[in-house]
Amino acid sequence: MISAVLMMTVLALLLGLALSLTSHFFHVDEDPLVEKIDAILPQTQCGQCTFTGCKPYAAAMSKG
Image 1: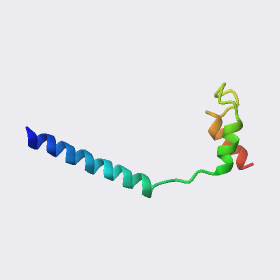
Image 2: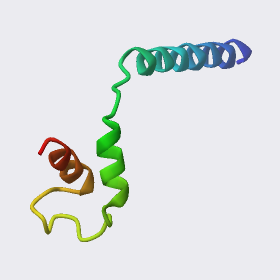
Image 3: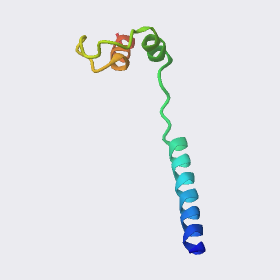
């Protein structure tokens, strides 16, 4: 019983470490202009401008 609990704890720690390392190595930097435009937009009535949300609309606006 104790060995099973210990094994699950070690496995959980290893998987947590793997997830942490993966998120560090595959981190994608966001464009700060997109974040600023997205913060200004109302975040309501999604889809009425033919975009799925404010974030894709902000990305399109930042690209011109």
